[in-house]
Length: 192
Image 1 (tube, rainbow, N blue to C red):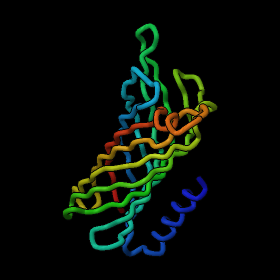
Image 2: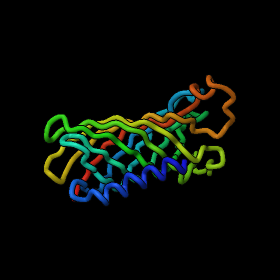
Image 3: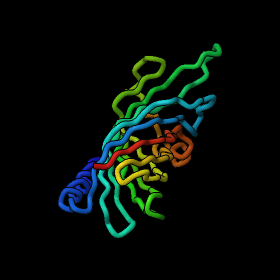
């Protein structure tokens, strides 16, 4: 985890030294998240939000690196035993580092890894942070459209690569068949 955080800091430091080809911005929007895999059944999507900042670092003409720092409210809804739904809410500080390519001047595609640091975890109002992993790894894929030089919209899907639960993972099959985060995010961003 320390290596990933140090790498993100190094990318940010690179952005400051390369200021003439770097733009900073803020973004926020809606999350539509759930938990997939493992023995998790009867889940429904939970609506949340994300908010934070980013740097868009130009590497070559149409290729950029975009590190971000985002607060993200995620989770899922479960069917309860008596027909009532209950929420599991997982709040993360997400640090994605994306490779971004502009196919045309206003339209871009992006992909890259993400580190999520668990801030809080609640199931039906009860604290479950002790049963939840403190770090979440994921992979992002998405696209964006620039309305103006400053204002853009983006759609991104994040699939979790690491288990949510802190229960013991005894073998490779347990790891691949464990419950993981799944999040679809719609963002509005403003670059300075």
